[in-house]
Image (cartoon, rainbow, N blue to C red; front, side, top):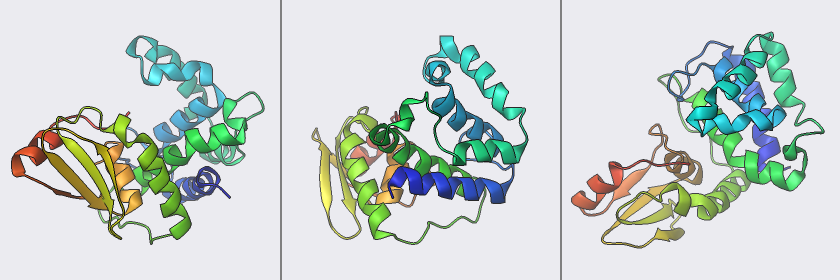
Length: 208
């Protein structure tokens, strides 16, 4: 099993438990909105560019509305069943590269959308895959940082993301570091470095 397939099953179970109206970490999105987003990415990829390009947002919104009007169990069933034949995510490698971190982060968006959350227990396989994902994408996700960035696992393993004047080191478990890199503040990550460097780093946008 891959991170994408494991997290697909896990987020579907979480959505089943949470219901369609729970708050998430994604600004004003409820769980229904978040699930519609995932379905558009996977089932109507031609409409997905509006997620990133404001001028195309109405196309994405219309596509999302085709899902939000469905019964909640049917929406979950469509995500659980996997990508349809016409989706690029049908290709196993594309699914893993495109959906592994996506499903993990959005799973935590659901889990952490309300107070009282705790990180999931460590999982060596999941943590190894998340660490590899972080190393591959951190430079892009922290591209706006005006200072050098180092990510370090609690176990001590570390990776230099970028160099620059000064340096900030982020310490946490792989999943927490991934969430932070993707712009989530509900992540248990410690930032160390000169206070001015930490302040400059913390002031800029993170994520895709």
